[in-house]
Length: 112
Image (cartoon, rainbow, N blue to C red; front, side):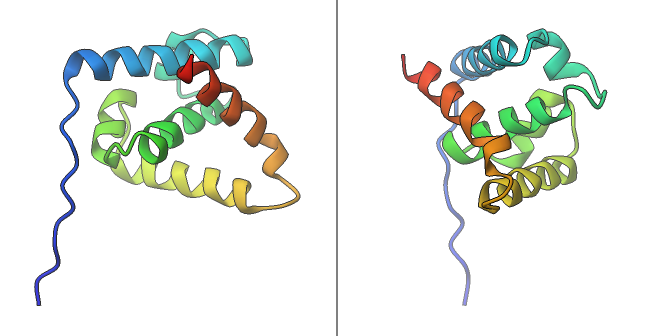
């Protein structure tokens, strides 16, 4: 029995870049770090914000891990690990307050 491969819509490059810029700009406002630093730096100060951006793109906008990895110059394994870390924090009653408010604010800002 063959499994059906889920087809995802191809996102045009213009919309893709605009979406990434909007997410990073919103995270920059809430974090105090520049959008460029969140996207490119590998330091421990911005990794949490980058994980939130990866989570939003993958879960809320249905991007593949490969597409997310290309945007942030990461491996798909790194994106997978980031998604699992964000999900584990969101599923924890004791820790979800660390990410949930920022996630909700970014999604609300994107709707406007």
